Length: 464
Image (cartoon, rainbow, N blue to C red; front, side):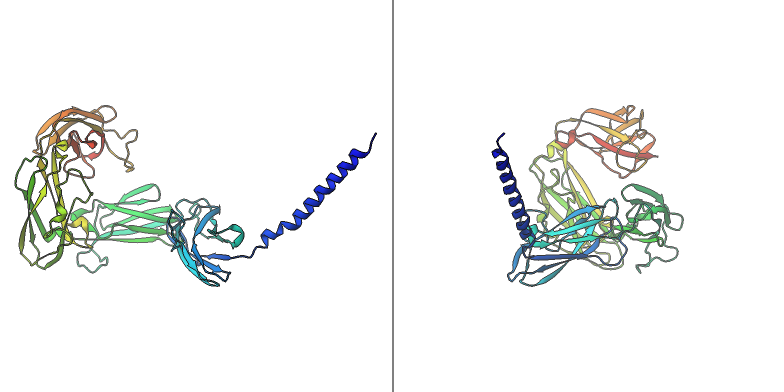
């Protein structure tokens, strides 16, 4: 047997071994590439809660002798809960065109980021990297201590009060009874204030909670649309929810249109009368219409009412009335809705809009009839969707027009569904036997040939 093939194999192994040796010697060169950017990250020694914004300090050091432009950063989860950065302070790399920042040669810059955890999945550990080659930077690893909501709980206590003396503080006797208070995070719990305005949520997991308040009695209005309670397990989270008297107590607005029936494209003359019914001057009153924004069947041209709407400002002495007549255009698609509306409110910039006096007018425009249908239910768990057992079934319903005339009747089926055919275009409300609307008065249904007119609706009612 010849030994030549074995010598060839031996040489082959020698070559491979040499190549591997050379590769082993060469590979460290990558790790020896000079570091260009060094990132470090830290958080303050403080209590952090799920859903509560917190700050991260990120430092970026340029180790080179040249400025680095367009530096951006990313965050990635290593383990635990996901951290969302809501403010990158110039370092954002979230969309095309983000410019990044410049780090001068040899310089260190410090950035304060704002972040939040929305869902708990354990203590978060994250890593920050810059948008340059991985080999050219030293990333920052960070473990962020949090209060664990699965092992820590606490109570929320608070009061809903009417600030009758205007001192911005809760005083004895100002509590408002029977206001509905809810907490969200992420599920909702609800309670009602007692006779002195107090409410309590007990033994809730530690985190930040958003609070909602509705059905405040006596016409009082909230001064702030956002209320929070921070439950950290150490002490009760106290929340004072202030309400004030509405501007409508002191400012009366009346409005009318020059006709009852219009055609698309007609000019509509609208008269507004503003009256100061209080004993103090009112200044800086501005009008604003169509708060929904770009409604197809809202009167057009209202933004040119330069005497009345923003940026115009109206001042009224005690007892003074002023009348303004403005001209708008009836929308071209108004016949699809059976009419058009004028919806405006009035108050100072930065005021409590919920308390502004408001008007809503409806001008009729003849249009073709349409079908309308939907569901009626009682929202027992307040999740804004109909669930089994919440249908208002087998119940008589009346369809009532804006002249307060009953134009159709029917009965809901086992699922709370009801339909009305060939209804004249226009606005309608439903009168449900034994039930009243949960959230709003006035007109609930739009019939006609408009696109949204064909959509099925869901209306929430409560026992009368």
